Image 1 (cartoon, rainbow, N blue to C red):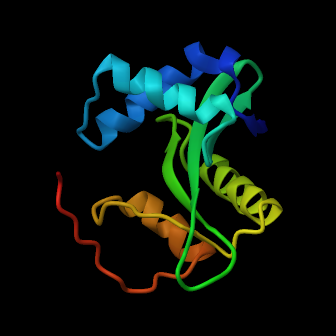
Image 2 (tube, rainbow, N blue to C red; image 1 turned 180 degrees about the vertical axis):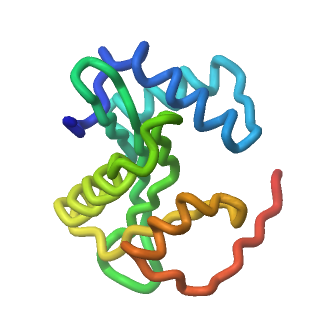
Length: 145
């Protein structure tokens, strides 16, 4: 398996995984939003990027990250916004490898923290996350505008 930065040429491989991620979270986006997301992830001008995991020529996972400032540290934080492994490929270390690659990327950018969210019902993912990171106990609140 190879994990590498997402490239413009990956659109056809990336999109089914992206749609799988949205379906998993019972979400949908307009085609324009997906186009914008892919452009931001691959354009090189935004404080964000993506990774793709390949098993031969088959895309089996994706991860997207965003860096942002913090009031608590001089270094940026890295938010692992999206992580998805193809059904049937879960439990084989792909998710862990993608997360560890985000850790490496964050270190290379002098980030001081990587953080992410998951839904409380995502038990399979939570089992992995509990092994590789701390769960600080914070509760998320949000207001959709």
